[in-house]
Length: 283
Image 1 (cartoon, rainbow, N blue to C red):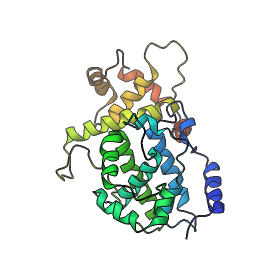
Image 2 (cartoon, rainbow, N blue to C red; image 1 turned 120 degrees about the vertical axis):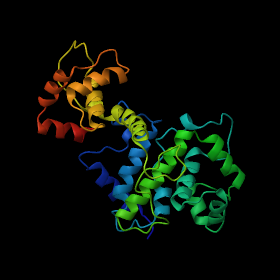
Image 3 (cartoon, rainbow, N blue to C red; image 1 turned 120 degrees about the horizontal axis):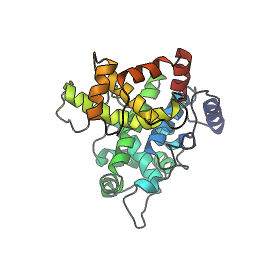
Image 4 (tube, one colour; image 1 turned 45 degrees about the vertical axis):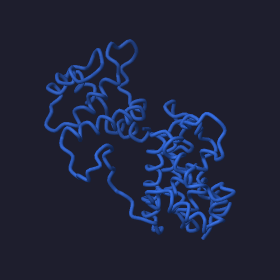
């Protein structure tokens, strides 16, 4: 069943009434602006979760066509400087569609669009796009980070649709692939795990840390984020006490000053369960 203006209004009204999420995400925190890929991924996650809960929304293709992208500034991720035939938003949609189907090459995508003129029109194509144009757009025009966002968006859409009982063109990967490891090995060693965790926590910290506070007041010599860095460091390692962890953290951290173990423990213990829950929700 195709979506309607009424079903769209209902969906976005529900999103607006959600207590712990904002849409669009770019104005919800200083960390997100209209060029933020993390913000775009957050928006796709928020919208898709509510979209597929509506009885009229039972098509992944319809969602890809309807996904609001007008606010996002793709120009920051466009490696072409001159005039181009297709808008970045149009290409983003069609590559998300390709990823949702799991097609590795543009040949299958072009063939699919050739037989679906209505879908082409909804995506923003007046004619059938050339396979070579799509290939260059993906490999040369899109930045590596934007390509990764396409993959993340498709995976999110597939999972949210499947969770809502909507038919999906393929089974979504429920576990993230380790980039750089194409051998098919499913069990990375401890060092690989820590390296991947470092990348993830580096990104998450920019979102989470501003929402957390120790309420220490002004003029403290050690930055508050150093405490959250140490807490993350301890959490990623088994059987590492605060004092021992704080000593080893000195050598692994890039900060000039880091907390001592007893000071860290004291500050964390002062937080009530209610405070921690509230900060988690805000993050």
